[in-house]
Image (cartoon, rainbow, N blue to C red; front, side, top):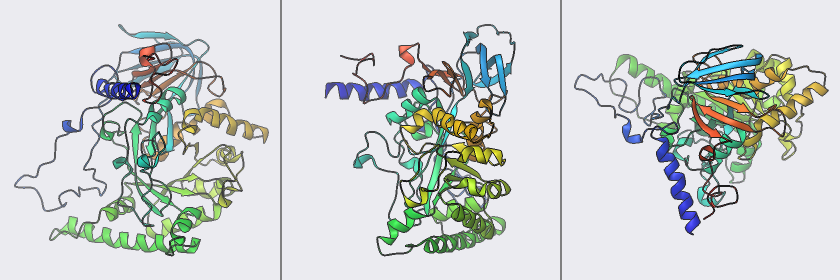
Length: 483
């Protein structure tokens, strides 16, 4: 009991420190200034709605600590967009990438790190995570990711379940070099609710982790999950055709809801009745909220893309997508990405036609592909998952360079999340979300040596004070706290 209480206090202290200048990341929710309506405020939009349909009444309070100017020299660089620089240098300051090249002069006061024999990359982005919503320990009391009470729960938001003290966040940072991640609702429902994109930083509140300016996502699901969950309750959907029928009826209602609100915002008058779930779907139809669709089979992905054309929205990414290789040309034509595993398969019927060459075949076809975890352990070794997919492609005769494969970990997920202008590659002006690996990042023997978020050093394998330890690991051998 003493160790458990001390552990929780320590974890909370780390988050409080993060609110100041020692680590990175958050201001308290109380720092956000509430919106006020003046006497001359227009009638449209209605209070709480906000122009743009995806108005966030709980905005990000994330405030990056810029760290100190840092220059890494004599290092191999994968820039995240397919580029490689051998014996290169990277300079970042004030939270941003300043310069990437061969020889860069160190500015006054900069920390200089010799990266000889090491590899520098953008921080890994996991587009499919449930950390915080299904935190450790995995007990029923903490199971908050699936509102499995209706096939349409577009009204729920994943961020309202995120527990910032989930030890999975620090494990993903220290073991996996993950600097950004999307937290999604579960896949029991056709419309599972809004997702949220987070920076992997210590914070007391989810608002202190929210990636500033990142679009929201809408989690959708097709296939076995929704028909099994609701068919077992004796209600629609119980078949795949039932899935699509409920989807189409819901989108038809969303289109009508959007027409009413568009008319009100144009002409004024009495505002239509508010519907929280329809607000999210309206945002999708307006192109401001990105569809993140759980889907395994190629035929179903094709049907969903046809449905998207019918109602005028766009699918950003199909998740899991074990049969994406069958329709790589359709995905490319529809500018839709596929987030896949390296070799998970066979755990249910719709996952049986998976192949290890999936990612490589997507790359060969010019489609947008990426790795994802959907797992609190897998998120700690996404670099190794890409190594497996890369090796499978090469065995099949698909020649893909290491630097190109790194796109599957950073730039492509950033694109699919609508944040590629801010992160995902080591380009001047982008966020300094950076990982220094102690060797080849596609080796099972390699680990992150240092991880920076917005230029702030959050993990350092050589510094015990910057080796984050979870509530449930404090007091164990090697943690530095055994009393």
